[in-house]
Amino acid sequence: MDKMLTSIPREDGYRMPGEFEPHSKTWMLWPERPDTWREGARPSQRAFVEVAKAISQFEPVIIGVNPDQYQNALGVLPSLVQVVVIENNDAWMRDSGPTFVIDNTGIVRGIDWIFNAWGGLEGGLYYPWELDDAVPQKVLEMEGMDRYLAPIVLEGGSIHVDGQGTLITTEECLLNPNRNPTLSKDEIEIVLRNYLNVSKIIWLGNGVYNDETSGHVDNLCCFLEPGVLALTWTDDTYDPQYEISMDALRRLEHTSDARGNKLIINKIHQPDPVTITDIEAQGVQTVSGTKPRKAGDRMAATYVNFYLCNRGAIVPTFEDQHDQVALETLQTLLPHRKVVGVLAREILLGGGNIHCITQQQPRGK
Image (cartoon, rainbow, N blue to C red; front, side, top):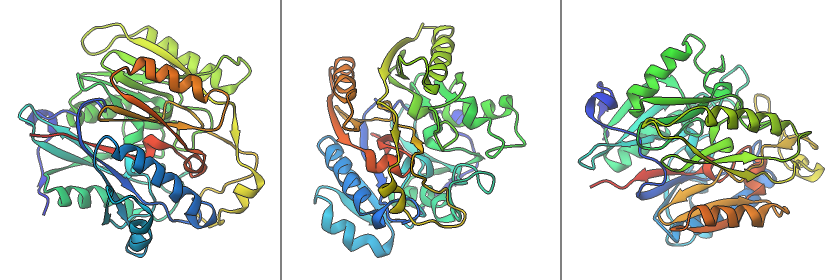
């Protein structure tokens, strides 16, 4: 059984590590719902297998599945990947899963945020979501870890930290009235400081254009290491993403991290606009309460939604002219990691990407 704590991480000496710090394992969930994933989720399952294979070169992977998918997942995943039963509504472990925190002695605990499917009944992406909201407790019970129950709605994709006191997020997401409508910006900052042990919060404006998560920062910008960021970019001044990225760049250039250091910002050019095809849209079931997939809709395609694992970086690719440059740029920026590209269109069709379907567990003592 996990133990639910009544204290707060900061007072207990716990912090959220940067994603680039050592991991003990990666957690994922298994896609299956036909109103999110086309063709009964078979194409997306193949993509998830490729992501799991890529990560398992570098660290252990555990995938949680609903009971009816256990044999299917076991049959198609490599034997290195552990399959466990974790009931869920959909496969976004970054957002529904726990956020892990660690103290100076190497003890790891978990934070259980409130999850409401990216907006609840006011613009949320599906209903119900109670199984997703219970995922952190199940993961932490499996690991025998203590659990902090956080008092706000928050998804893991809406925050990035440098592990040294700095957090980046977006106003579009965390200040959205469908998340924590009774809380002010200052009150949300207090919770972030208390639960993640950060002292500097950098607010960017909007997330990536047309991002249905209300602009998660993990599509827009992330830490490669303390003080060093990757930022989604486009040189096309007519693209709606241009002003969003330019605004983020200005904000980042005019601030510093928690230690007072100026930030180094690396632009990663986005792929050309990726839109849903007729065939792809027809393959997704239309269900009341779930955001529909419409042919011609532009998806929030970005290379910045990559996942850092031990000595590796798993990067989404789109069979796009910008793929190779993005991979080469990230390899240059991450010289001590092996950069691995994985075709990710099928994940993107569900509304997110590689970072959205993974959650790192830091390496403890």
